[in-house]
Image (cartoon, rainbow, N blue to C red; front, side, top):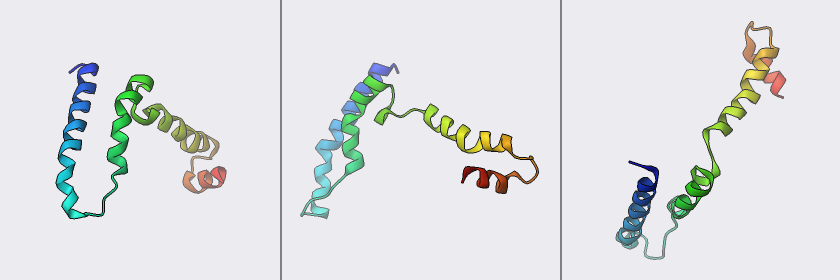
Length: 90
């Protein structure tokens, strides 16, 4: 499956969801909110523009891991480092 095909499949699945979501209306006649499902409307654009949904990618978590874990660990004595790392991160 190529990326453009995957985006078309996402769009088709989303369209199918919007057609079939009416089946949930009797559950709560006053209306219901599905914010996470709504965010899917923006995925095609976000993937096309930024390469990932919501502009996120795995490098963000890796950079946070380096700052919060790897660098403080290097500053410890390596003997029972957890407590030392917590103090460093304070």
